[in-house]
Length: 208
Length: 143
Length: 289
Image 1 (cartoon, rainbow over the protein chains, first blue to last red):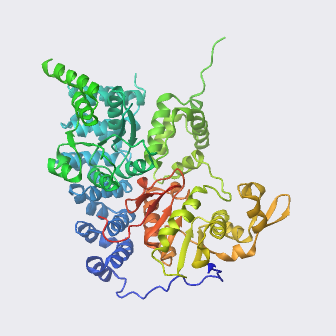
Image 2 (cartoon, rainbow over the protein chains, first blue to last red):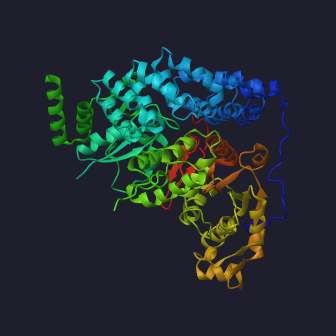
């Protein structure tokens, strides 16, 4: 016993022959009805199949194993296509925080793909969707982030959406955004938190 | 004897805001950005220095507020420290979800300072702070 | 005499520092308190100059909006201490022999195989430290068969690890008796590790984000992945964590670096606090969702 001496590279474990072919229909079948291990591997291997994006998105709403979900989200994130972005959007409306935040994380990595959808999301009737979209802007590397934030600041009627935008602006804004922040503060004049958040943001962006 | 409060929220501004209010009341405040970081901080507390109160947001990445409270209760401290959930109305689902997870109360964001202070003070059993907060609440109501 | 203002490149204001601090904490979990001002400012100024930015604000905007995250990795590199040496962060090795292995063996039959994976191997200090700890400080070493696997993406360091030659600085934390037992001092600057220890580690070239590389790793009981993920971008970090989760046996443990946290990476693992360290564990069974 003790430390096992190695001699070159033994196979750590035989790679088991796959039961199903690794083409898309085979992988999707495994994704839907395999055991946990099979579903995880299928989710992972589907990263290489851009046409599987919609199926991944739909299956995410049904999958209960956390590791399989993470694999599916990561596969969509690697694809980073407009279809993948589209497949993730419905998750923003999910009751499940892991799905919602997983979707935001995945979308945050695909600015070009999700960019065209942002304006629509910021006009969504659902307050939560607007909040999550602003959260997404907080991580998104897209040239229009500032423009979108300023729009929210000027127009959104919900205090929590505006609060989220103030927070992001504190990080990405500059001295010329002071007026926009003050205007938002005035719009929600009764709200102590907005007052605090705007004061803090103004300090951060070093607006006079 | 100072109470230790852990504020858990992914928004830095909200953490700062709560920190300010809670430390103005004389309490020690620590922060975490999500339920998982919070759980790690709880586990790393030296013996005898457990947190006395948790102020917990619901929607956070990696581990949401409800899951945090359930995991916290599984860790099982004696006596169990009170948990105050603070979240947007839409996120709150309903009062029973918070209670079922093991929380002791909730407030809707943005919470009015005096309300947050009074609730926290009552949960901590800090009579002096309760009186001050109650006074502010009344003053605010009659202003 | 008129005071000259510092060029904007050389000046980090309080607001700059707070902005950087919050961003860095959000991204890495590392918090710099006010006392670290000098440490932070100096390195920020270095990065501002290295990237040719006009001032902190331009640097920060570029950092925040760059598509690939390369500068963030450089910044993390600059802000963290990167030395490798024998028995670095040894409290985790203590935890291994005192607590983690105790739980691992509950799921093994006598004489069973235990697998430990050290990644990145870098120049070998970590896997060899693990080997020494097992031989010297784990009472049950003779009752189980332990495999130490160690991987790195860089073949140069792998070769170096297999040559096993170390500087006085690298072996400086080792108790004298271990140094004498496992190394031969070749000259003033070189300590050569015993060939028995080299043979006890199975080195491999692995890219942690490539599923084809990691697929073969299975039934791992303990992973040491210290000060690696912190340098990855967000997606790569998640993919790597997922690969390691898959490589682990249920109930297996993973140790990150001192200032790293799973809370910035993935929800898949459960934190576990032992006397010497906090580590993370793959749940023993079932849906964690």
